[in-house]
Image 1 (cartoon, helix red, strand yellow):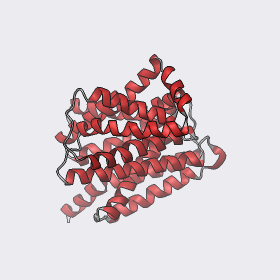
Image 2 (cartoon, rainbow, N blue to C red; image 1 turned 180 degrees about the vertical axis):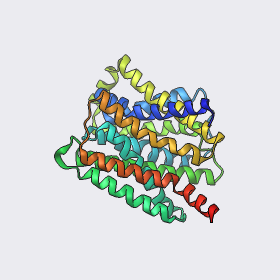
Image 3 (cartoon, rainbow, N blue to C red; image 1 turned 120 degrees about the vertical axis):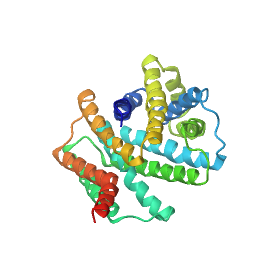
Image 4 (spheres, one colour; image 1 turned 45 degrees about the vertical axis):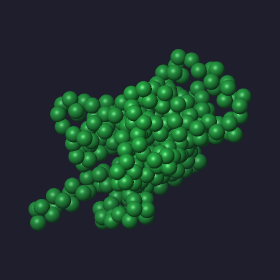
Length: 297
């Protein structure tokens, strides 16, 4: 990568990693469903002025919006409300790479490589170590399970994105922006039944400048700028060059949560974190090592 593009990559890492601290602040100001719905409404309102509506059929837009947008963030936000620390959430959510691999084998009949099986096993052990940390931490089992469910929903969205691309339809930033309209609706419906009309209205009228800044960060910085720059780098470099950047997200998430939110992590959780990162790294770099070994032979 050029020095300029490396700086863009670092911006993405910090934007996505710090995103979890901002989510924690947002959940202090709004309920999970209202935060999710308003985040995607802001994204749709702003983004629709800059991106044309894609020609992707409605059913594919719905599948993407309900899985990657609504499913992922409804579960993630709920998990953080029910005791999942922001820093650990940034790591556990990366297990989407493992779930994506599993779902691609089950749903798309893709071939799994031996190193990928090993990566899944290693990451699974690490997640089990984190989940069984017991009372040494503020993390709850419910929060952990909901965050894992959010990662699996993200993985389903990845499969939907791949299927959309295979059918020749758009799955670019414009598609993400316009799908946000569809994502906001189930969030507000869920808020109506979970929070009730009075709490929904209270969330709306209590929006202040700090809440607007939070919503702006989640929609413009983390989504529009983050995904836009990610797509730009993917067009300039191979996936193998760009994908490893995502490994820096939990590092920033864990560090910023510890420094800003004063979150503490137990020794057992640190051990699990290192094991999960090892599994993610093997999944990311295993293909390169395999190809290099073939070339040498």
